[in-house]
Image (cartoon, rainbow, N blue to C red; front, top):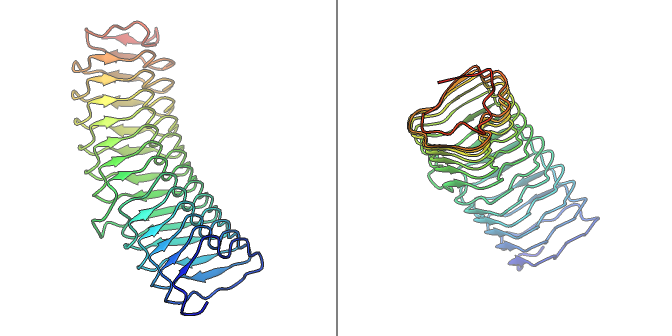
Length: 322
C-alpha cells in the first residue's frame, strides 16, 4: 500500500483468498471492520506503530496467520478481531490497549501463550473463549491500568490453561470467568478481590486447592461447582454468604470450615460432596437452603445452629447432628 493511505476501510480485503503478504505503511492509523477477514493464505502481517485501532472481525478466520505483533500505539481491538485464527500460537497485548472486545481471540485453538502485559483497562466477555491449547495466562503486575472486574466468561473454556496469576488491582472475578478451564491446577487470587462470581471456577476439574484472601466477602452460585479434585479450600472470616450450589459435586472435599462471619448458605451448597465427613455451621448462620447437604453420604458429623430448620437440608441419617 502506498504511504498516502491513512486508513483501511471496512471489508477492504475481506475474502481475498490468494493474498499471502501485505505491507501496511506507517501512514495508516486505523484498520476497519472485516478489513482482512477470511484471507486464508495470509501467514503473517506487520501492523505499523501508527495504527491506533483494529476493527471488529479485522483478521477473523485468517486460518494460516501464525504470527502478529500488536504495536504499542494500538488502544483498542474490536470484537472478534482475531477470532478463529486457528494457527495463531501466541499473542502479546501491549500496555497501550485500553479495550479488548468480546470474543477477540475466540476459537484460536492453537494459542499456547497469552501475555497481557500489563493488561488492559477493559477486557470483555469471552475474549479468549475456546483457546484450547493455552497453557499459561500471564497477567502482568507491573502496571496499574487494569479492569477491576475480570469479565464474565472471559477465560471460559480454555481447557489446557494450567496457571493463572492475577494482579493486585483486581477487585472481583466475574461470572464463569474461568469456568471449564479443565487443566487449571493453580491460581493466585490477590488480597484485593472482594467477590467471586457465579460459576467462576465451575468444572475446573484439576484444581486441587485454592486459598481465598481475607478480602473476599461473597462466594457466588456454583462458584466451585464440579471441581471434583478440590480437596482443600479455606474460607476466610470475611465471607458473609455462600451461594447456591457453591461447592456442589466437589467429590474430593473431605472437610471444610465455615467462619462465623457467614450468615447464609445457599440451597444445594454442598450437594453431592460424597467425601465430606464433617462440617460445623456457626451460630451466625440464619438461613440454609434446601438440599444443602443432599447426597453427602459420608457425612458423619454436623453442627447446626438451633434456629435452623433441618427439614429438607438433605442430611444423611448416618450423621450425628449437634
